[in-house]
Image 1 (cartoon, one colour):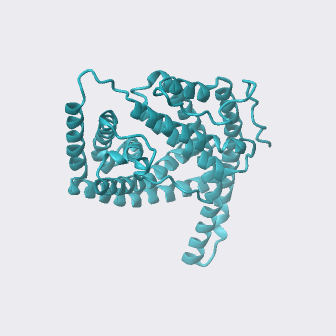
Image 2 (spheres, one colour):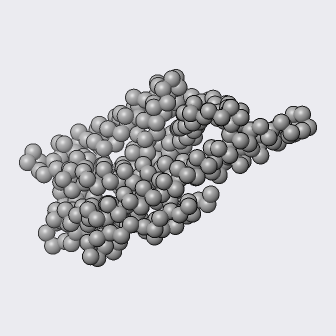
Image 3 (cartoon, one colour):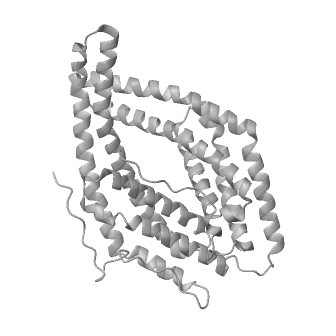
Length: 366
């Protein structure tokens, strides 16, 4: 599948005209990073043991959330420290991403195979499961290497120490009666959330194009970026962000399941080709590989049907979200907190239909 540019972690929030990094902002930055760093560290032992696939999942999510915090508050950290931390956390995410994807695929095939009654379909699925398990076992070596590297480098301890010092310093600098939400911090939250919402809404036209798999994948990433950003500011803006966070999570989940189907539909033909090549190299004949086709074709049909169902559901959820005016209400709530003399975030044109009613996207088709 074609790629899309990935959001890079940088300190662009320090650009001219960006909100200042005041004491309240630095305090939230330190607390957000410490919370996510603690969540990441808790899962290291379980990830290394590979006894519970949820450890890898939780550690991967924690690393993603930490990357978001580093991106949003990069100007609150020394540039050299930011560069080092961002690089190391990105390496953690990349290593865990491959392992998590393999875990999910193994679990899916195990469950799918358990429900298959056609004996002639089982050989192909069993072979696929074998290859996936072999692939996951091989990936564990890189996961162990990553865990050892992080542990031996003292990265988590060094980040924790620096962030604890930053938090303590900000608490000392702030007056006892200082509000936790300052104008600068609110401006940062509003600008960040509005920009990421605009990224998500950019992909709305592709809700009428069921074949636009690359755009749906990019839309999932945009929903994830929006959600993780809102979650950082939610402790201070819970009334404005609680419902939008729930909707972003819901959309991200459906889009993620659609992407899973797309991955299977792309890779299953590749799997059959690879098995055929293995047979030719080993025995000089691929005649016996035909028995694998029935199960793989059954899985292809199931994934194609599931994707159509999920695409229809995505359109329905998007229409419900628009009908409830979730994004418009969120931006309005943020604007009501806006500093005196400044306008709040402007609602993107597609945040809600002009007449207040949303029309669901076209059906996914047969």
